[in-house]
Image (cartoon, rainbow, N blue to C red; front, top):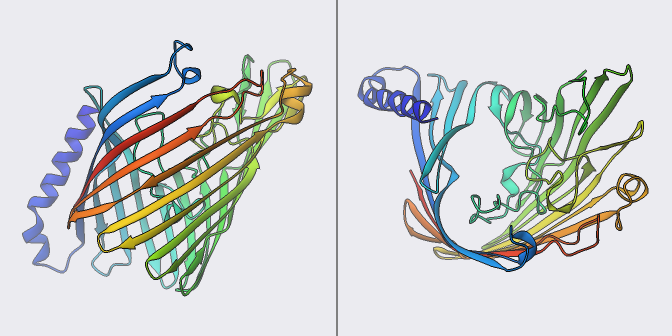
Length: 383
């Protein structure tokens, strides 16, 4: 990763030194950008979420979350084609890591655009995300992902988009994230007869915007015993954003089956619930997921006051109770936050934030899974 980062910096530096020459001729152009984030705060977990299981544990943290980045955008001379390269940068406990966040190219003709590469898309669009920023390195807490907000993450894909100023439609063929076979099974080949696909619509009218969509993937398995198995993951999502003066309201609701492994930030066997499909005997037992998030933002000068609430319910009637003897057939968890983003200068924001997470009860035993809270500040430099 260190070598990859050094290569990326060297390439961007060479491009940057070429700015005068490129600007003097009608040739392709580019822009460079960077985001440097630093979290500082206190992370408190109840005893159920600790390793010792007897005492609550709290700790200070100061680190750089992985959605800090270094990016470059490229454009053809006529602006009909372009691309984006973005590397995420993380520093935690004295160790650093670099990964690829975006790498894609696009071509636009009229209202149509074709894009291919590593990215996300309109389904689960980040245009609706709540401004919950502190804690990515502390139990993966960011934007209420998996706590009321569904985001399918970035994967290699090919997109076709048609959009006007008021409406649009996007279809994408994507690489599935989950290729795992059944837990404990041997001699199993996992394959896909069709890649993951999403279909999303866009509507805008004045201060109102929405991107309703559906995502689907089908998995097949060849088993050494000669039997064939299959399962699918699908989700529907309905986001809404409405702005009236200084106030903005955001909402996302989602419903589907078998998120675990396919959509990140959802538990598999952790957190007392398995959001993957379960193989019981010779039949598949799907886990259903119902969730949603609502957040409000109010801006006063350079200060924003924002807060939100997220809810998730994971349920598997047959797989948990009937087959495995669990005491409950569902796990309900929720989270809430309040934050005060403030623009200190043109390229600097700070965000004091408090967030709280309730993990609900374990389906297997009905016992409390615990709670945690984070109180911190994020320093947010963007160039």
